[in-house]
Length: 588
Image 1 (spheres, helix red, strand yellow):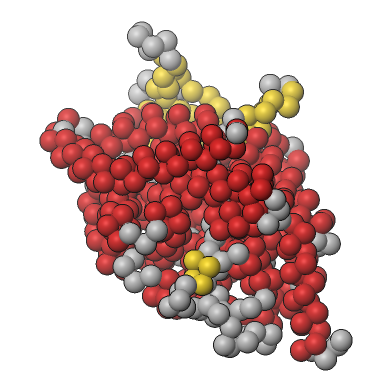
Image 2: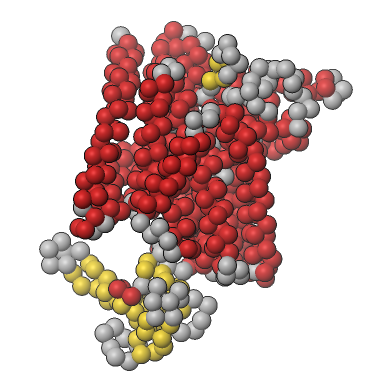
């Protein structure tokens, strides 16, 4: 009876969502009209951020409910679930993430796959399509946010999440292929919603009913996650880098409007078109970005040992300003999972389109995602930031300013040019707001980056950069190659663009699961998806990343419930595939 009520509730939610797809178009259009009228009262970007910030507050409190662990410390429950699951699965599958890397590489080349197997794309194209959604701004801006908030020690926990997350990704992608649907025209439909519904149905009536409910909620959360993590965050950081580098399109909504038109022109193509685009872009983006990172690290070679030492030291001690070890762990898990998506259930949607009749074959291919994404690309980015010294830079200035020997004094210590970066000390001069009682900082004591000059500056003369992810990474590269921010702007655009395209496909498959292949609903969703690109570009990073995290991590709970119940099926599929591999290799 209870389960029947759950189904009724989920169906009502679906019905509401259908109407919302249409109402949202009208609502967003109306909002944009009002925002345009309000431009003289603070600008469209500022008005959008004022609307988005309260939504981010509410979502963050619900999704990241914290479990107290003593000494006034707490960790969000959803992160504990993700971390423990990744560790458990690694042990359960006897460290498949390490011992099957060779087999995974051979599988990508098609050695063990029947070319006439059902599906639409090759193993390589499926991996490229999935990587296009994971290798992106999470690696460039997300790593910087993790280090800025959690300290260098967050890098260590990101690597741990990446290594253990390889097994999580293997598990969910194997299930994605196992329970996918192949239509009469050869097109495929797959993802967590299908293995939740059909996989749990094979476990009995009660679990089958529960699976239907979980599948509906996952599909809804996937749509929300696509809009937040795969859309708004990407657009926000792409605009930040582009406007900082070129000094044009400083209004976020203008940049967002251009990107929305470009994305809208592509997402009508479907998964085959996405695979063609991303199979070309992803290797180019990864190689180009990695070559630049290697060059920076080569120049900073003498700083690498101390940077690695700092990562390990901070991982288990942490700095007070970064929240100590708990802050490092939280940011490491958050940004690691945000980057590689292991445990979220999104990647099986892309991997389900692969040509194979052996589900575990694609599971092994997917092992490489977290390794490439987090262990390699994220670590390289972190080392660039730390070895350059930029990890401790918290502010800069866009004009020529003076540093004073004391607050509000006329004694000038030195004058610095626009673009100068600063390390902040703990010393500040504040006043208490008469209405709110909040402490407002008027003066900061700073030290000029990589120089001995220090003094006091007015808060009005500097811009705080403690959470500006893409700026931190860009400036770290610029310490060696001063023109690199321009190249990075192009790379960031490509990363963001390919990620938005791939996530639109993820969300579209969820819409199809909920409502069938209703073209009106699908097209309505695509319009809404593009409109949120404008909103994401206009809002502040703080509002966008909090909302994106919240919407993104919603998918974890229904997905992992299904994964735990379906582990025996994954184990059976792995045994079958490894036996197939041994026969092909002549080792049986």
